[in-house]
Length: 257
Ligand code: C2E
Ligand code: CA
Ligand code: CA
Image (cartoon, rainbow, N blue to C red; front, side):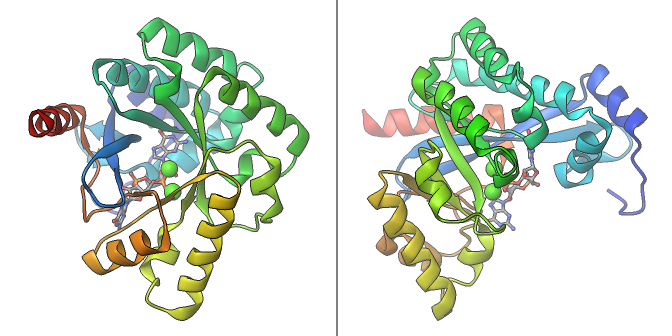
């Protein structure tokens, strides 16, 4: 898509109404790369003129214009519907801080998963520190509701903000996702030390750890040895349409038989 195309809130509203959004899914693999543990839903906009528009070009606009609620609701509905067709794999949904702060959000997710026939323990929500930094007590209470139903809660992009390590203990997360920027530099002593520390702390707190943006076998070897449970990145798969996940899961199942 040409970089100089301007997208307005009206365009985006139109796209939602015309059902032009699509979900791609990117696997999170076990650290040895043998099994798909989870697939993360990543939204794109299939525009007839602009082509496949990446989320960095419209999620910030959706957040600013308030359209994120409508867009986010669409993502939850579609991801639950796709996820219900698969077995033995979790579905992770990115939740913007604005969506998370909506008092009706938890009930909406619960009702939608239920209606789609997606078992709660196969649903994961990914939040960033923006979801909780201004109201920790409220966030703890909300996140507990998801955990009580059996859903997983991942802290996304860990290490990119100012999140104090103590929040890992205070908030009821089940997983930490280490940001790609650390993975990119994992051969450098400082970044390697941070990864080791985050994995040790997370494991001590009973949390799972996923490293994001894994692109090379060397990074996989390092992150696996460091104790990450799951790895995600182009080394294993780019985000792909739902049909490709269906095919990969069938392939995994055939291999297991
Ligand atoms: P994110 O949640 O951190 O997602 C990971 C991004 O890194 C994805 O970009 C993915 O395609 C990319 N990525 C994964 N592995 C690699 C790798 O090995 N190398 C490189 N270079 N990139 C990799 P994508 O799909 O463009 O999404 C960008 C961001 O947009 C996401 O970052 C997330 O913050 C946001 N986003 C995507 N879908 C949704 C959604 O449904 N709702 C909300 N609120 N945000 C979304
Ligand atoms: Ca994410
Ligand atoms: Ca991330």
